[in-house]
Length: 140
Image (tube, rainbow, N blue to C red; front, side):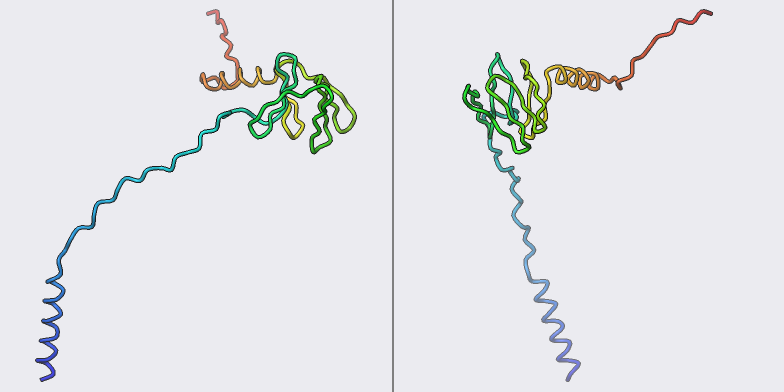
């Protein structure tokens, strides 16, 4: 009796499992990336630049001219005056020239340094490794 009951239970279980329909899940939709916010002044660094003889201060993407009575103070003690004179925390002074850039941390990058860096980057992109190739003339 127990064997018959076990066989019937096993048979009913097999029929139940085989009777379930095998349906395919709905195909997945292609994921679309979230839109990126577009910044108006993309590529503009925060800091101080000398443009057309004027000291321009850029903070949070907004650029304004530094006017005569104002002095821009930086957290490291550096000060920039409206005429382009930079007074470092240790008292040393320097004059911003056309195209010079000073970051908000107080690091000055001159226009010449930028030009040298650009030429090095172009050389690397062109496949040069920074070493000059010298052709030697062999007599032979």
